[in-house]
Figure 1: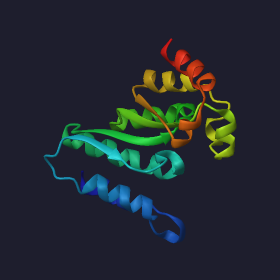
Figure 2 (figure 1 turned 60 degrees about the horizontal axis):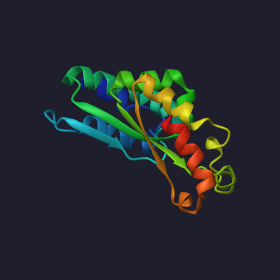
Figure 3 (figure 1 turned 30 degrees about the vertical axis):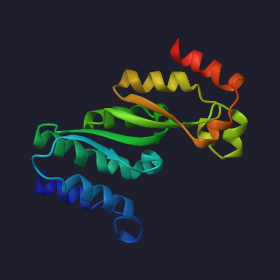
Figure 4 (figure 1 turned 180 degrees about the vertical axis):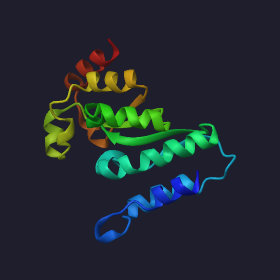
Length: 165
C-alpha cells in the first residue's frame, strides 16, 4: 500500500474528528499484513456492511493495496442479506478483491425472524438475493443461525427446494 493510501485508510474520520474503532481496526488490518502474504482474508464482523460509509471509505484503500501487490488476497466478509440490494457497493467490493460473502440467513421462519429482530431478512427473496450476489462475482455462503434448529420441515424444505432449483 502506498503511503498516500495508508494515510487515506488510516485517516477515515469518525465522530469528533477521530477514526472510529472499527475504521482503525480495518485500516490496521489492511496495512499490517506482511508484504509477501497471499491468500484469503476474512473480515470478522457480524455485519460488514453495518456502517456502509465506513466500508465505502475502506474499499478504495483495499483496491489500491491489491493493485500495488498484485491482488494477493481474496477478501471474505460476513454480511446481512440486504447487501444484495446495494448493487454499487457489491460492485465496489468485487473490484477491491472480495470473492465470497458469508450471508446470515438465520432461519427460514418469518415469525422467528420477526421474533429475533432480524427484520432485514423478512420479505426478502433469499434465493434471488443469493443469485444477485453470485452474478455480481461474490460466492454467497448462506448460514443458518441456532434458531434454525427449531424450524420445522414444512418451513425448511420449500426454501431448500427453491434454492436448489
